[in-house]
Amino acid sequence: MDFATALHSFGAPAHRVEEIVDLLGEKTGERVQLFAVPTALIFTFGEGKKQAVQVQRTRPGDFDLGRLAELETMLRGLGPANKSLKESSKSMRRVLSRAELYTPAQFLLAFSLVSASVSVFMGGSWREILGSLIAGFLVGALLQKPQSLPNLGQVIVPGAALLASFAALILGYVLDASTAIITTASLIVLVPGFTLTTALTELATGHWSSGSARLAAAATNFLLLTFGVALGHAAASHFLPDTAALPLRTTPILLKALALIVAGLSLSVLFKARTQDMKWIVLSVTVAYLASIMSAEMLDPRLSAFAPALAVGLGANIFARLSGHPAALFQVPGVMILVPGSLGLHSLLALLNHDILPGVESGFATFLAASSLVAGLLFANLLIAPKLDAWDSDSVC
Image 1 (cartoon, rainbow, N blue to C red):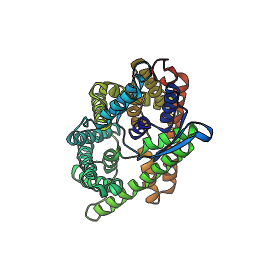
Image 2: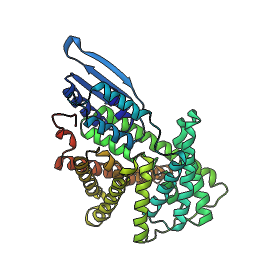
Image 3: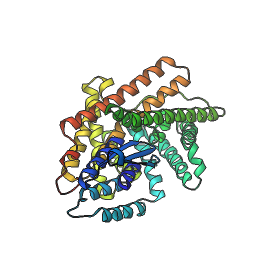
Image 4: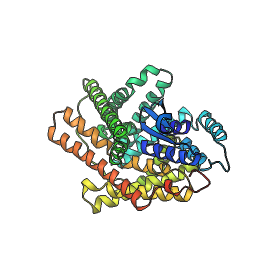
C-alpha cells in the first residue's frame, strides 16, 4: 500500500500503479488487487469470504521524477531472496522524508527560463523572450505562496492566469511585444495539456474512472485559466490601448538550440529530477522538438503529433530497458513539449470573445492533437513493450 500510494502521489498514472501492485502481489505471494483513481486507491486482499478491502485517500500530486526513479530502483531490488519488505519499507520512508533537491529560488528561476524558452519556440523576438521571462517570474513567485498561505491554493490557477494576462498587456505595451506569446509562454507549465493526454491514455487503455476524473480536472483547469486570462485582460485594458497582433519572426537555429537546452534543464528542476538524470531530459526534449519539426513538414498538420509522440515513446521504452530507470523520466518531459495545451486555451479564449468558428476549430484541433499523441504512445508500447514484462525471477522488476 505504501509503495502504491507513493508512486501515485509522484505522478505515476493509474494503469502503471495497478500493474506494479499486481506484480508485487505475485512476488510476495499475496492475492492483492488495486483500483486506482486520482483521489483514492482501493485495495482488495485475499479471495472469497476472507477478502478484505482497504481504501487509501490520496491527493493528486505534482511530478517528482527524482523520487519516482528512486522508488522504482528500490522496487527492482525487492524480493524474498535479497531484501525483505520491512527493509524496503524503511528505505521508502527515507526517500519520502529526504529534503527537496532544489530550493524555491531554483524553482522560480526554472519557471522563468521555461517561459522564455517557450516564447522562442513560438517565434518570439528578444522582446517576447524578455516579456515571457518577467511574466514567468511573477507567475512562479505566485505559485510559491500556497506553501505559506494554504487557502490561496484553491484559487491559484485563475489567480496565476489573471497575473500573467495583466502583466502580459503591460509588458507588451512597454516592449512593443506580442501579448499572446507572453501570456501563453508564462502559463505553459499550468496549462493542463499533459493531464488531458494522460486522461485520454487512461480512457484508451480501459481505465475509465481515472480517465474521466482526469478529463474533468483538465477541463476545469482550462476554464479557470480562461477566466483568469479574460479577467486580467479586462482589468489592464481600462488604462492600456489594445495592441495589434505582431507577425511571427524567424528564430535563429542557434537560439532554438540554446532554448532546447535551457528548457530541458529547467524542466528537470520543475519535475524534481536528479542532476544525473538531467541529460536524459534534455535529450527527450530535443527528440520531441526535432521530431515535431520533421513531422510538420511531412504529415498533415492535424496528425503531426503522432510521429513525435511515437519517437518519444520508443525512446522512453528503450531508455527504460537499457538503464533500468522508469520510462516516465524520458517520456514526461518530451510529451510536455508536444501537448496541445496552448491550443485548448486559445479555443476557450476565442469562444469567450464570441469568435465561435475559430474557437470550435481550435477545440477540435486540441482533442485531435491529444488523440494523436496518445496513439503515438500506445503504438510505441506495441512496438517496444515497456519494462514491466521483463522483470526477472529474483526481483520485482
